[in-house]
Length: 122
Image 1 (tube, rainbow, N blue to C red):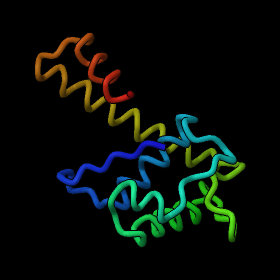
Image 2 (cartoon, rainbow, N blue to C red; image 1 turned 120 degrees about the horizontal axis):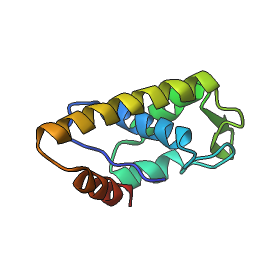
Image 3 (cartoon, rainbow, N blue to C red; image 1 turned 180 degrees about the horizontal axis):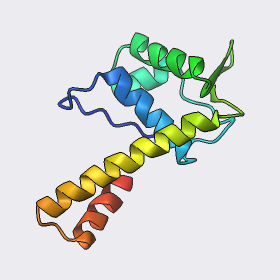
Image 4 (cartoon, rainbow, N blue to C red; image 1 turned 60 degrees about the vertical axis):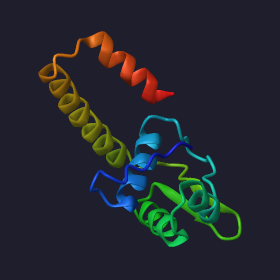
C-alpha cells in the first residue's frame, strides 16, 4: 500500500491518509480481504503518530470500508459499500477534471500530462 503525505497541502494528515486508502479500495489496488499494515507499521512508515493511523482505521471501519479483527489486524471489508465507492469515484472524476483544466491553463499538452500521471502512478 502506497500513501503519500503532502505536508504543505493544508489538508489534515488523517484526511489525506483516509482519502488515499478509500481511493485504493475504489481502484481495486486494495481488494476485499486484503490485510492492511498494522497501526504501528504504517505509522513508522509514514513517520506519523500511531494515534493518527488508529483514528484513520477507526473512521474507515465505521464507514464499512475496513474490518478490524481483534488480534489479527485490519482488512479491507469483504463487501465494500457500493455508495462509498461511487462517491469516491465522483470525487476522483472532479479532481481529474480540475487538474485537466489547470493543465490547459498552463499550456501543457496531453502527452505531458500523461507522462506526469505515469510518473506519479509508479
